Image (tube, rainbow, N blue to C red; front, side, top):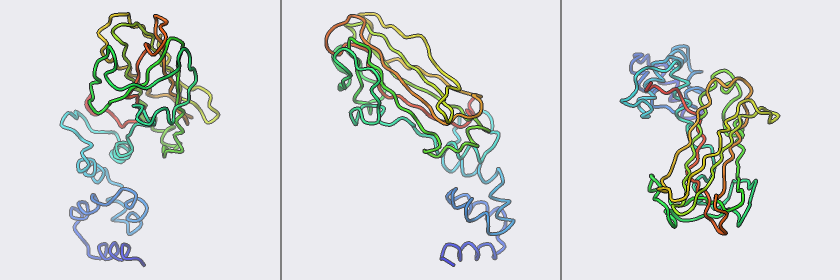
Length: 264
């Protein structure tokens, strides 16, 4: 028996008060709790399966903010989704060129990457975002396909819990040139058949705009069983048909799978 398992069994034999055991186990990584600690004895299993333990872990990890107005339906599930929350899109801010992106349309003078704020542009609201993708006078579209199972989102989670899938995308125009912006999102089955889609009308920005950055946001909820992939595609072009890169600018796109919103 290894040192960690010896320590676990010695703790279980010491008849610790449940309150003390709760505090100790709340500091153990979730994977160890489920795979190892829950097998020690029935008391440990019951403590590990209790909402109190996962609520405590959520507080310790800072997953519960002062703005929270209610409690989640399932604390363990809330902890799991909070711990896994991250941007599922790779290279959203052009820091690695076009790596991870599929170029679906490359019209005009093709896609390009520029430094923020660029000519006739505005700084991005987040100072850490220093680059953006920019389109040309012909249609430019790019995409990513997210394999949920491959990155750790179990089929049972997606089918039974159906956590919110939140899409965010930022776009802007140059002051001196109008442009068009498009976004297409699909939730796909194992065979890549559409289950739900988000296909808003293209957004047009007139010439001599303020060049401010705009956020497109959409949340998929209660989307049904069978979602295994997320297809994200966006792009556009300029509306003046000028040679070069006068089209819509895109950066800081994100796809996140999120726990319940406890602030509403």
